[in-house]
Length: 304
Image (cartoon, rainbow, N blue to C red; front, side, top):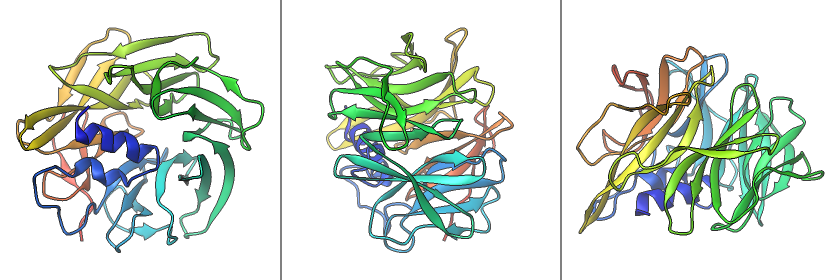
């Protein structure tokens, strides 16, 4: 894998800030690693949850989808990572001592812990009383659903692979995730939540491309994901683009394709199914952007 791909995978596991995915070897780092990263749009379409180092430490923020009314949710020394939304309550996780604590916030800044389970990649189920997460090592882990305290686990996958970025479909029946095999190849797979089967939906997209970080469309018919491609080994540099795959046909579409060495990553759907939020360093450091699902009218949301 490229340095970018490894950095993003590790970031999502909670070991590094997600903005490290945008740091290119051989270039001068920006003044701040990220001003906006890892965006997740609320179910109402009114808010975006994201991380930022604008105040010197990586913390979780929310803002309106216009880019206005930015609110800081966390102030602690821990490295928090956005997880999703429960209705219009933002969720974020803190990974420490091989376990993840899941917090629910409110737009007034208050937060409360709602779950603590072994492993990483925690997602709250639509019912709100169970969580999806992975257990095992970085290179070999399993996808499991459990109670909020880790009890009553039910394994969905059976090991022998590395699983990252699990994401539940809107109806809660399917899980998309990044799968890494023993050779380091990255693919997008889907599993039935009841454990009855798994299958690949995205394998080789472009030469040397590494698909990862899936996000379900609101109607469950498409998955958005990023593809990282190493374009230079001396110095090592990578580029990345957002792609869409039609679940029924396997048809692939690249959005806002580019040849310049910058990163468009971590897509998140708006509930209208016609827009995506994503992180990009196309203007320097990592920022939150929005574009249409035809790749047009990209605009930057986060600023100083």
